[in-house]
Amino acid sequence: MRRAESLFMRYGIKSVSMDDIARELGISKKTLYQFFENKEDLILRTIESHLHDEVCDMDLIQAGAANALQEIMLLARHIIGQFQELTPSVVYDLKKYYPEAWGMIDKMQREHVYQSILDNLKRGITEGDYRKDLNPEIMARLHVGSLYLPIDQSLFPVREFQPDQVFKEYIYHFVRGVASEQGLDKMTKYLQEAKAAAGG
Image (tube, rainbow, N blue to C red):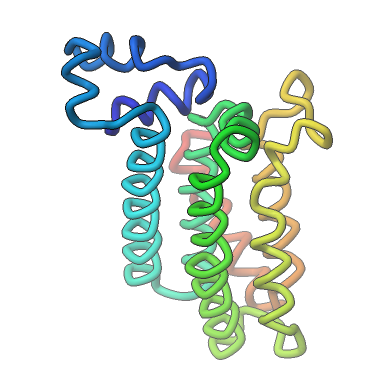
């Protein structure tokens, strides 16, 4: 499923055929249909597998982060990596042609991602890195509602904007908006460390 997912991420869902997937896997199309009823079935199961992996990755980041600010920076880095592999047509194809698969993604965003960000915001307030006067429920919902804006072609045409760069600007704006003075100092330190680690 990972190889099918990789094809979808790179080329879009509509443009990848069952023949392409069979060829990528080194099997016949007949063999492929022994495991999947049709392309929609393959897409649904691929999305299900991808979402399971995403939840596990997010939970690992959350469990391993020293504090809320580090957690959100690590989550941002993870999402930026996803955007770098994703062609914007994937979201368009899912919304238009595979609404059941898109519904699974939307449900995960509205439930798991929302709860993770809400927990992060509450943790950050307690730790003193986020402003005490912010409303965690509103900010968590704003964040979830903004996650797919970087690949909205009507706002950010890919010929002019790279989704990972748009998301970087967004998350920097988001964190600066919720951070306290203490949090801003810590964020500056994290960004400097990340730049040094990248050799810049």
